[in-house]
Image (cartoon, rainbow, N blue to C red):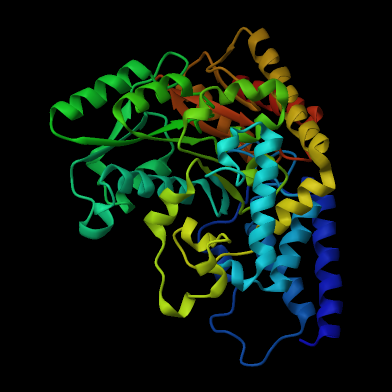
Length: 469
């Protein structure tokens, strides 16, 4: 493809994306294809001769779109938001065009320095502790997901707990990790990959509001110490996936400090809310955490993947992850004056993700991002009010953000029927969880195209489905 051919194909691709953005609300939100249906539409073998770009683009409509669940649809209320926006898409496009492999400062200084700078912007925008900025001994880095960030945090915790011996001799079987019963599944996966072992993860009981019980945490740590284990880390959550419960970070930090544990705080979805000054109470105690992560790709108008991971002392990451083969040695690294982000993550290679985050912040401004987040929260509170006013429904958990957990008082069978009916409509998509043993509906508001009219239409569908049986 020559530059001129690329220009023409690029115009067509941008037109396709722009048309999709304009019409995304017209598609069934949840894909209706059956397993294997998309592959059945694809040729069994690749073409021997290149095909015209027009044919490739046409198959987006004919083959691919039927198998897409439309995360940017105004009727998408499932899981958590996966925000995208025009500036973020263009940032991703330009990053791909540049083709940067930003493993070292030397391999593209702008990729590293822009990333450091926009992560410092996030510290300031969200009121994070100063120790998480590059102006201190800590700093931030963009990972692909909070799952990767949690793994890196637990690796660093492992090394600190073993005084650097785990990297040399293996993790051993006496280290333990703690999180609440509602901690994300990525924590379970991370303890396996990091070598702690699945049996060394302790799921701590929660309070009535679904947040981790610090007294139960302390009891679990003391019990493990008595059995000869070495407690290494605790992962607390601001905004659990099931219900957006907020663990009491300050109290957990006190327990962690008393027993010498690494405290990692997972705020993958809810962390974006701290861009609002009135929501910064959720960060109480964060100044005592060793690491913290939140995902701009969930609620900050930045398309996947873009996970902001912060550490209070970057030396822990570098000591844990740095390996210096001869072929990567260079003058800038050896000067000690630069950051090499390959030492802050699992893989060597890394994309220029900072570009799209930079585009988003500059295009929307802090106030524009705040307006998006505040609007999502306001719509969720309005929905919660409708639920509370209805005699047959109840709110199942606190709702400080833009997720509302609700259920019909008729029991699990009724709530399952509601979910199936809503999702079968094609106009909305919701998911469920289980809280206090009861099947619970989750309505996550946050798509940029969602308005209060879409939320009201969803509520009407939920009510209609409840009475249709």
